[in-house]
Structures are given as C-alpha cells and as structure tokens.
Image (cartoon, rainbow, N blue to C red):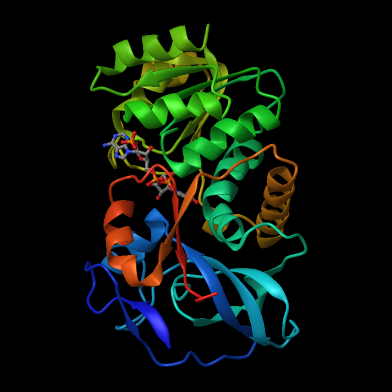
Length: 319
Ligand SMILES: NC(=O)c1ccc[n+]([C@@H]2O[C@H](COP(=O)([O-])OP(=O)(O)OC[C@H]3O[C@@H](n4cnc5c(N)ncnc54)[C@H](OP(=O)(O)O)[C@@H]3O)[C@@H](O)[C@H]2O)c1
C-alpha cells in the first residue's frame, strides 16, 4: 500500500510502499482518507522519547477514514482514529477503543486535524485549569495550532479576556481573528519584563495560563499570575527547563499543572472531541489547515518542524 515511510529514526518519511497492516483482536482495519501531522509524530519518529514501531513504519497519530473490517465497528462506518503511528498510510489497524464514529459531514481534513491539538487546548482549559466564566486567560504559543484553538476555546468557555503570546508576528496578529483581545510578541525579553507586558496586555493579572512553550515565557507568566492562578503546561517549544521564581509561586498560591492527552481518561477525550466537532459545525471554532498530497510528505514534515502556523493535513486517499 502507499504510505509515508520512515526508514531510519530521525529522518523525514518519504512517500513509498509498505506491507498491508494486519488487524489484531480489538482492532479495526481502516481505509485512511486524511491524516494530520503533529509535533508528537516527529518526536515518535526521532526515537528519543517513545518506543516507535519497528522500521520501516508509517508515522501519524491521528486521521479519518472508513472501516473495512472490525470487531465492534461495522464496515463502511466513517471514523476518527488515533494511535502511536500508522495514520499516514492507505490502511491502518487501529485499536477500536480509541476509534470514534462520526455523524456529521465536516470535511475529512478538519476531522483529521482537530483531535490532538483541540483536545489538548480544551482539556487544558477545562479539565486541568477548571477555567471559570469571567476569568482572564494567557496563551503561550498562541501562534501554533494548539494555541490558536486555545484562544478560541477560552472564549467559548466564557473567558472575559484572552491574551495571545507568540514569536511570529503575522501568526500573532492572526490570533486577533480567533478572538484574542490582546497580543504580546515573545522577543527575547527578560522574564520580569515579559511578565509586565503580559499583565499590561491582560489589563491586570491572569487567572489561567495555557502554556505550550515552557522556558522563559512560562517563568515570565508567573509574574503576571493572579492569586490562585493555574498554569497548565502542555509543551516545551521554548525549552525543556523553566526557572520559576519561588516568590511568585508562593505569593500567588500558584498551581502548576501538567497535561498530556495520552493520560486523560478515554471517555473524557471522546467527549472533548465530539464537543470540538460541534463547535466547528456551529461555526464557533475554526481549525487553520492546509492539505498536502502524500507525495509531498517529506516537505510537510520539514515544515512541521518549524511551526507551520496551521495544521498540515496529508491527503492519503486519492479521492
Ligand atoms: N500535551 C499534549 O497532549 C499535547 C498535545 C498537542 C500538542 N502538544 C505540544 O504543544 C506544543 C505546540 O503544539 P502545536 O501543535 O501547536 O505545534 P505547532 O503548531 O508546530 O506550533 C509550535 C508553537 O511553538 C512555538 N515555538 C517554537 N519554538 C519556540 C521558541 N523557541 N520559543 C517560543 N515559542 C516557540 C511556535 O511559535 P512561533 O510560530 O511564533 O515561532 C508555535 O506557537 C508542542 O510542543 C506539542 O508537542 C502537547
């Protein structure tokens, strides 16, 4: 079958051929229509953090397709699936427990790309931070896809004011179209200075920080935190270590939370995904995306490594 093929760890996949997958017990064989690229896929294919499948393999953690054969699922069902890898291929064997049947008629691209990023944004705000209506939210890494969705979802959940922070000037100004009330450009400021800029943009201290970057911006956000604030870390684009000042953590009664979709209860993930689809269907939430043919997967992979400012969706099926 046609697939994006990772031949050695740390190297981009190239369009090629792989053997057909074999469906195990509790799995569905799915004909893939479209699959998304996520930073997670690059980490898996680097071999640095998770155990990747044996080489050569097709990367890709999420996608949309049609069931060919399953235990619980019937042939012909249109589904969203998720796993460690395998989505960037004509067919994938996916655990049925993580497969969600789809009802609406949203485009394959939106369904394929909304899950990982959207669930991280929604679950970080609602499940981890317990955002309350009327609170102020700061999104670090708002120029990325998770951040762009977090800005919109914070508004949907009733945030009174949302501040978007990111490096890329154009992508940052686009967050205004997603509902950001103010923006702060990350431009190498020292933590205290950056914290003051966050607070000025927020018109006061911030209650919830959704942090996709860690490093200096996360440390800076502690200066802008309100008493009782919650900082939810979901990524480390700006660095794996943040020097958080104890005085800010103590004096703000700051709660620092981690979030990974992988450890959220499956029923919570499914409910979150279905709500995300509803918000998109109602026109309240939009996923910035671009469709790429499978033949150009190596190029897309390279773009994903440098923050493409939209979800890159690989069209796997020819039609
Ligand atoms: N915990 C979870 O379950 C979960 C789920 C999804 C994603 N994530 C993580 O969340 C992060 C964002 O994911 P994404 O899908 O939004 O990725 P993305 O679309 O590729 O965006 C990357 C973001 O990181 C920013 N960035 C990159 N290098 C930076 C630096 N040195 N300093 C400051 N900002 C920097 C980019 O800012 P500019 O474009 O402005 O440079 C952009 O906002 C990733 O680390 C990803 O692994 C975690």
